[in-house]
Figure 1: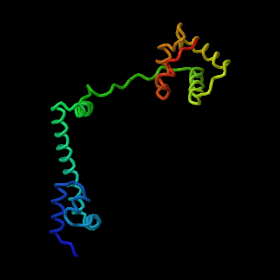
Figure 2 (figure 1 turned 120 degrees about the vertical axis):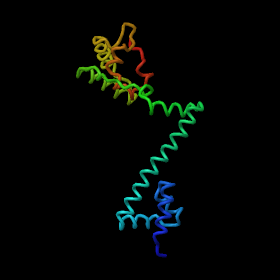
Figure 3 (figure 1 turned 120 degrees about the horizontal axis):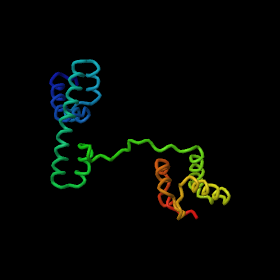
Figure 4 (figure 1 turned 90 degrees about the vertical axis):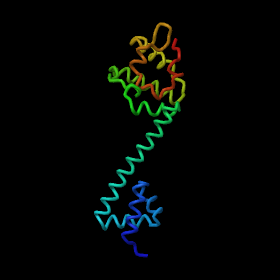
Length: 173
């Protein structure tokens, strides 16, 4: 069946209401591949389709935003939690502007060794463990009670993200 300008007009009206080529084509009774063929052979039609898609999506986004705002104003906690960080800098998660403190090559190697043994869940040889604990103490990474100090967390915080919190709270005596 040959398509005519009425089919194209119907499609464009549907596209203005439903800014999705596939959906608007099906609603118009036209195969979506026909729409893409028309767009390829008619630059003016393709330009009009792209403009309707842009405007339609912008309008649809505004409608959805209004639904979200209404839910948030109605007290929906999920909507509030979503809305505020996306619309106010005040509610966005804080990002540190400070680079991590520099660590020495020795500290980096100690952490790498501890991390590898922790991942493998193998007992650390006593001589290596004692050497590392001594080095951590000497650098102020273990406090007098044998627990990891604040300096340890300040120094290695960005490396600890994969290391379980329960492991990092162990006492070394």
